Picture 1 (tube, helix red, strand yellow):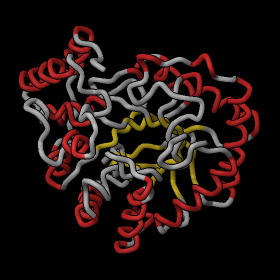
Picture 2: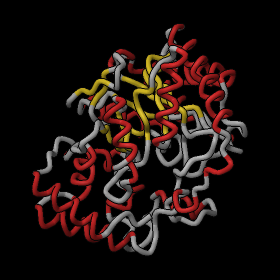
Picture 3: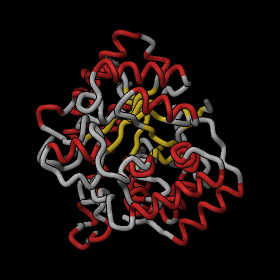
Length: 350
């Protein structure tokens, strides 16, 4: 497994990350520990989590459970220096805290995550989503930034970065990252850090896949010029690209669980009218290229013209085993050209 240094930091991680957002809900403790064992054996040392996990659904009583499962694994297995952990503070939410985060909150949430993870330090500490609003989570169709207050936002950034600086000096975190951020927001976080001498942004965790390529233009330009690594979540489009939803909602799947809890089962708005045709087209292309469509989708994210680490996730060990079989796939130039042509003809369906 290749290693990647995140931005201008000294944090080196595996070129693929294991996502853990189902741990403690769809994925039980034993299976979660087994998945982390499997990932480590395959050379994946980078674990991504968040204080609000598990999700689907997010419940106030389960906030922090995923970090606790990882902490139990670390305590049982030992070898903290063999893995890198990224976690996140939640933005405004009625399930965690309404105001999201400020400098004071950051001090508290870092300590809480450290306790749940049973560790002395976090490798990458991320802001799950902005407090000023975001176009993530299927909100890009109706995103309206007109209510934002520029100076208030910049003051907030300085306040948060002061707390991040304190945590770095205390050895509690090694690097700082964003999530669900825009090009403007990422640039301002960088400007503010440089102005006050705070840690620079080294990662941004945004959605990215064959079916969601919002990152390809403005964000990609910021990332390349400012040395920011993309941590790509949902590289399989929340499971759509596996093809498992072509006949409905398989038992235990994300859509199935969502419906069981009274949700719409639409994968956060990803199951649109156009989505099945796009999935079918990518599966047909993979078949023509002699590739597994799941392996093709993950490999695509690793061969972008910007630094990109896909976050792969599975609800069980069988799914993870299949993912790992294709983890070293390298797509040919012809395969990449055909993917781009298909994307042009059938652009983002959600």
